Length: 221
Length: 220
Image (cartoon, rainbow over all chains, first blue to last red; front, top):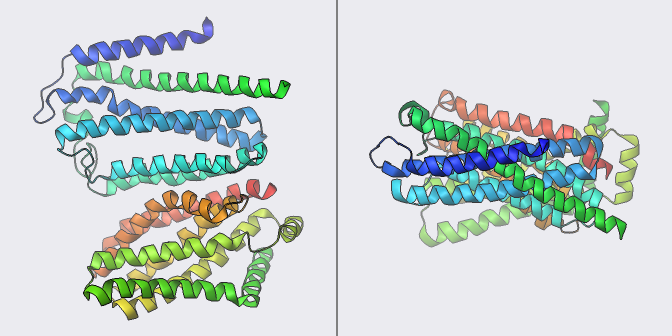
């Protein structure tokens, strides 16, 4: 019971986000109108994806340091769920963009960045698939994971700030926090981020447990 | 330091002995440029400056991937084991990166020469263009060498090489295209400090990571 309190927290916060995200007060902005509520679902996907990618990176580093198979399983499953979050963020973003920017896939550095990120993590799984030997697979994919993460970061954090972007907070556009989001929205937005990150960790922990049990079964056969 | 120097000299001598591989790379660049010449210049007799620039970088990207892929598969596994006994992995990766950098600078400059003969030279600030070529050669060689190390462990080296390296090179490539576009427009050096800084930063990160991560690859 002591260890699962955060699952109740995640479920509760998510419920809170869903209810207050849909019925809560939001400021009326031109063009954005009611679609601003998507901020509770679209933006936390990226926070969740980043958190999971960082966890995956940490476990890859841990694997290289001490070579425990368990750490490799953690790294893979975090990356797996990060991809799902990335795809969800991509979809929610293009639905939103369709109604606000008039184009589901406008020319924008952040969209390009996430496309590249999804490519990188897909390449990570292709790499894993091409080795038979477990140890070799784990070591090489951990190396690639670290390397890919480090070259992905400048794409996400630096390049959008140098070029023009439609996203708030880049290329001279004001960030959401400055003008659009009032304190009512903030009351939902921050819990939403926490809730989605926790849900991501929850899903990955389930997958990790299944994988570890499977490994255990196979060892005992 | 001495070790790195010896390893670079070894690579150069090896390359010199089997000239066919080197000639193959040069021919790869030349024939790709010639293909672009036939498909663009002869057909329509005109090429947009942006297309000119992007086409050149794609040629360089492909020849880089093609020539660096063989860094670790050229030599037999037995000889790799021998190097493992006598040299530190960090000096092996540094030597390979420096060697590939020299190779890429040579191929890039040669490619640029041939490209400007066939397709016309559209770079107004030639110095800046060559600087971007050099920075690109450094970044390509550093990241591709590590990825060649990863890919060489699998059976499907060349396929894996493209899949693993393209997404990683994309941020660098887009910055390089931007920088060389500035050079084509004849902007002064001071207008592109931002780009130069970012590209050098990415280069440094990639080199440092290759240096740190390669020992783990080398073990398997």
